Length: 232
Image 1 (cartoon, one colour):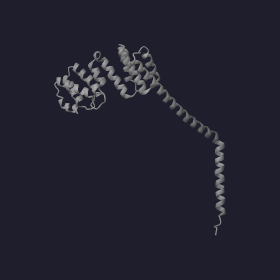
Image 2: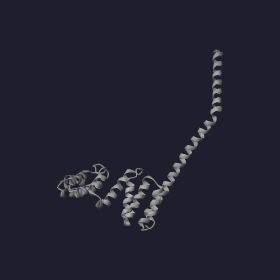
Image 3: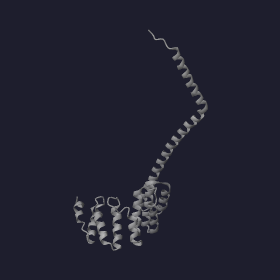
Image 4: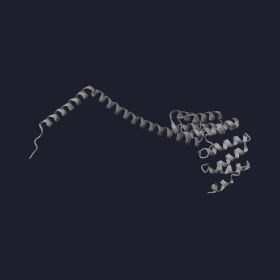
């Protein structure tokens, strides 16, 4: 036997539904244009972001091809326009690609005996906070290497202090320059200990470690305990 429907409940549901419908209609009348505009703006922003990403990816691919062609031309000895092309590429690109173009520009300057240009370019790279840190560190080491004989030993040591630490990826290169600066200061024992530390650090390239063992010995520091590690 069917249970009779409560007419009161039915009436309340109908009233509730009517109220909800009226509220939605009122919202649509009052804010419909704003809602539609918001949706349109969201779609436009999303589409614009996707378009921008696509443009960025295509631009990066084209710039990579330009850099690759520059390397090919350098290998073929076609270097007349290389500096201008590298400068133009560095001005249009960013991140690792820009850093690579700038480092290559500095290397070309060295090959063309333009030492001031190379130093200026390396300094520009090392001071640029927008570039990846490994490139900045490499540029700092390269500029210090070129300037080593013309700047004070304490300046060399201060520059490279952040990199002259065991475990740092640049410990070998920065450590050698720092140790040579210490020798120029007459601090041979301190330099020998630094060479010994480089010899003991397995992250340092083996050629530098082997050389460090030998130089440390000439400075009165026995680093031969590192030799078995080198042989592994």
